[in-house]
Image (cartoon, rainbow, N blue to C red; front, side, top):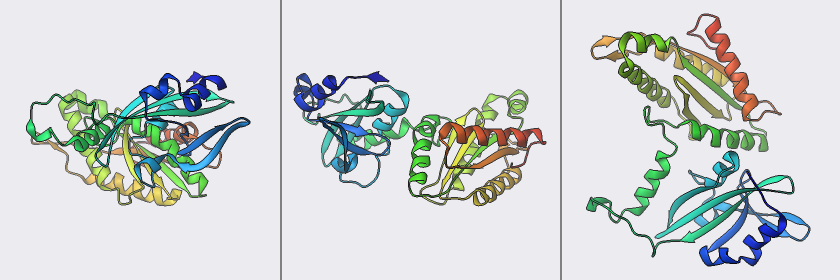
Length: 296
């Protein structure tokens, strides 16, 4: 995370300097609130204007570079396509007055952009290409569902949004039981098959637009249910556990019996991502200690 003094920020946002020659729009963003801030003589002031207004939408961008820069402490770059214009967006994290902000630098590169291509079918479909690249950055290559990067960026957003409207939020962490034995007995390609099949089964249980599931790592998967109290989450997870136990996993004609263990936890008032994940991980550990194939 970069530390910047007030003069440096003023140079970027107010006087511009070389930055104004390079970018069409410079702005200070509160990444957590998704709002534009204004630098005043007595401090930073919230304008209560959403940073998504530039794209004429009412929700956070699917691939928000500002929230990624906020949580990773690294500069993040992306391309966005809007109304025939290709925008280069550079998000730079910094600390000022003890709080983390993002300086967004935006440039219209439509006319200056060149693309090498080998297939005429993608030549003019810039919007599709950008959308695909943004999707790939958040997708687990093996299972086809969301990845750990998405969890790190969006679970804090879901937690903060739920707190802001006093809404419950529950999460579950799944672990495929004795997964190493599957690899050792049937081979790693079979293990990959099991991971993919389980991920797709889990994804198929998502019914609400606000819910999401992602691969946490290895054979672990995280389910996030904004708006769901603990008991509703537990019932859904128990249903998933039963479906997995009954599902006909078959690899190269060989049936493979699969079970999963799961921990479930509800968000508490003082939770951040770390506290919530630690609690649900503890419950998953308890499920495995009690004999696996159960929900705690």
